[in-house]
Length: 106
Ligand SMILES: [Zn+2]
Image (tube, rainbow, N blue to C red; front, side, top):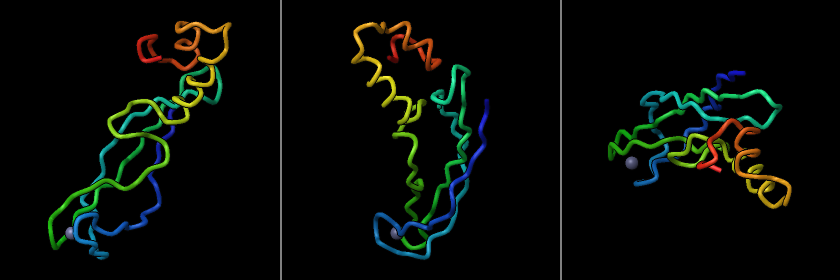
């Protein structure tokens, strides 16, 4: 399953100078593993919005609720993996197969 998404444009102020009238610089498509819904793999194609401040020229990403910086798996998947790791019956391999990630990632 592939989910293609963009977040609502909330125009967060510039983190450097606080300027509130920033512009959209563009979008960066990020593929995020979000296999928590069922046994099938799920990929979010998240079009991350980048802003640019016309005053200090700082560029920055919008804040998003589902992935940490530089991660390829969603924060929900990380949480599920952590929960499953507490069960004595689970192995790294069984958890990896469930969420379509490698045992090393687990
Ligand atoms: Zn600025």
